[in-house]
Image (cartoon, rainbow, N blue to C red; front, side):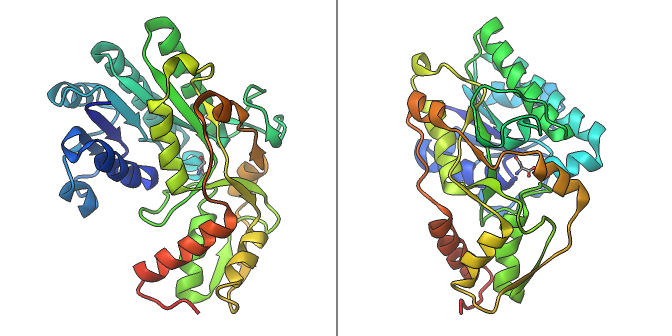
Length: 320
Ligand code: SER
């Protein structure tokens, strides 16, 4: 990777991945791209930022050409709850955005990273130790775009030799940019509510178990996969990866170790609950471990400690 473009750079993953790539490869070699003309300051202060709509193929081509990009981390996407509210918009952004990226990569010889998700599975799939290769019949529009994306990336690899690689991320927990309308967002929102108000109103049932990961592991995974020896990759699009698995009730108990007066009530959103009920509780990530050495550093205990410390500082509050 010599010159990198990150699409969706203002999003939950994008903000942190862009910074990590700039630290690793040099700020001059990492271009951030997003749809907003007013990105967070960090993105523009530490390097180049371009503003365009991912559905605009010629704008994308121009940026790749101008900066001689050889790798595209394509993160621009609408998340699951937003996609249910705006299915046509989600199809347009998620699929036409991806095909533009793949076509640009084919023309300019770029490698492509594409994040898939636990959302790529559905209720017919085994929810515990979900195999790498298994039935994928998602019921959410978001999941449909993720499975289609995995297949499209495979197609561009087999048909045109584009070096496409991808991960099936579980729910991602982070403390820089907020997630934008996903089903697993509760696991981020709960920390802000705990530190600010000592109370959280959860939109999923207390016993909803989902696969989760802390952002530092998600960032390491993306960079490690893109650096991995291509010859060793049997699966490209996309690898199951996991780090921890918990319910809102279990997460609450862990947070209460630091904030004993923290309480949670439940006001279940039927749309997001139905999505969550169809997703894996824990994926089998043995293919990622075997093919490129994947290993998570954070479990629930270490993640909660770090999240509370970071958010307490961010919100200028006191823990305890
Ligand atoms: N975090 C995403 C969502 O909830 C899943 O990949 O939509």
